[in-house]
Image (cartoon, rainbow, N blue to C red; front, side, top):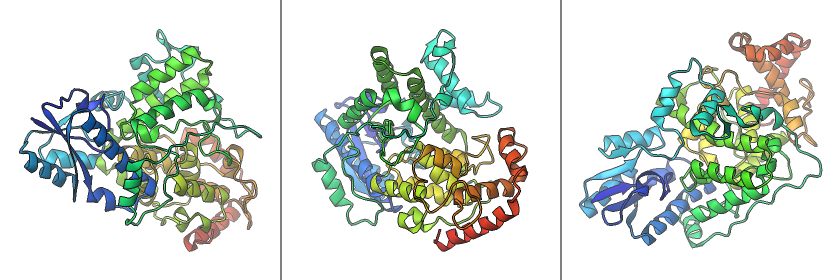
Length: 495
């Protein structure tokens, strides 16, 4: 007999060890550890989703004939050892974990680890590709994936004659637009049981209200709903942030993918099949596929390519504490930040542009400690995982890795936020102004950041235009003084 450990982020019958497991010879152990519950102050919906998904999955395993030991213990290893004692099974196996910490723990415990197919490229194959690159670039990896997987290819050439339609996918929110209506999911008995079990914990955020449901059935419903209602318009509006839709045309699949309830291969297959039989914009189809086989796979590969200490990098020497408004959105007058944090508190999710160009952009410009910001992102998002957040925050979000992952920081002044969102309307700050009482903090801090870090970035060819603008700035000294005022207000939590 074998004892198979299944973690809370590998909930799949068709991938990994369970794809070939036999109820006659395999016993399953799942562990709800105290460390998982209490090591951080989590967003309520993040913790709920993980626990409820695992409990639903354990029930499904039982209906398929598996003997399942779902145990609560101080740590994962303690839980596994408890079941080893109860069953007298010493032959313990697990899929390769999705985090450095768990991999170290399972390896130290002598558990046999198996490569898996929860991603479209194995760690070994990604490492082989990365070692051939002078500089890591997601676009190069994406083209490599397209060819390797034969997705949207016409022989050796990309369908449509170009690899990337990103320039076509940057429209601002249109006026009087009707956005897709998201699905609503009723909480079931297991969902309510989990909420009751965690109500004694000190947690952030609101209780779930039907935006997500932690089951395989709900995951498939969400995928089909996205294909029917949102795929065709996904591309042009993927970067916009309207104030009358939280979901826009995004798929909302990341929570399901990141716990194993959906596999990227089946998503790509269903998207291609749908596009073959329905009218779907190539720019939208390519943009969606790029997120799945390009960015998501690239981020996971980078996480394993870099050393575990990567998460501790701070190349820009940012050390400012996380402002209070990241926990209480009413403590800032900045409408974009207040609204985004409110959305995070409501459902533990906002799409990639609020994450990158509002939250991360501000953290970078304000010099917020990257590890403090990373910790907040890990705690708050329903789709968070170490492999997701470490590269996305340290590498892309706040450029704390000295350009190892991305060649330039993703920063902008208030003009970008005004163009791509509705948040500037009625805000206390003017995105066009960089000095004065009503100057937008994004705009002030943007020019101040460029000046402060000119020794690092002025020779970067991709930032030539930005530094040309800095040289033409006639009021730079006034901007720097205004930045001191903004940063003092930030430290006083009066911004």
